[in-house]
Amino acid sequence: MDIDKIDRQILYELQQDAQISNLELAERVNLSPTPCARRVRQLHQAGVITGHHAQLNPEVLGLSLMAIVSVTMDRHTADRFEKFEHAAAELPEVIECYVVTGQDSDFLIKVLVRDMRHYEEFLLRRLTKLEGVSGVHSSFVLRQPINKHELPI
Image 1 (cartoon, rainbow, N blue to C red):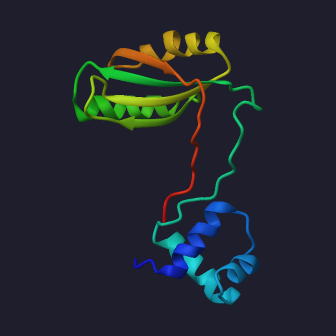
Image 2 (cartoon, rainbow, N blue to C red):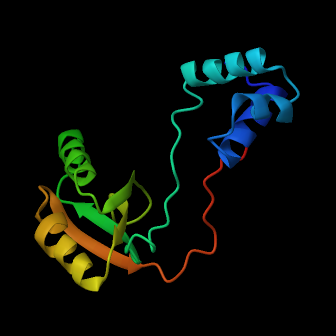
């Protein structure tokens, strides 16, 4: 799909406020409502827009400790990695997971927990018991000075 200037404006506005009405969106991008709605539908169909999500405040929900965990696997096979990915996705504390290169670990996972006791339970009773995990290294986030959710378009 070719994304033109108007599509980029639509994407920018939707990243700022996913609940914006079509009428207001159309006004902001200087279109009439029908073509605006058509463009949004096309962006969905092309897979450019993949969903609409509420951004929650983890601290208000009692999740005040964030960790970035490096996970090392015992074997480097597609099957082993797929099993880990599926198992990690089932752990509610894991909010992001990346397969990485250039360091000693195979995965980086972002974890949100209530406190250190919750993290200890997560680490010792669940994460390290996943098939193939041979090592972990935890780094705790002190603060998050940049927290962008918008893509640069």
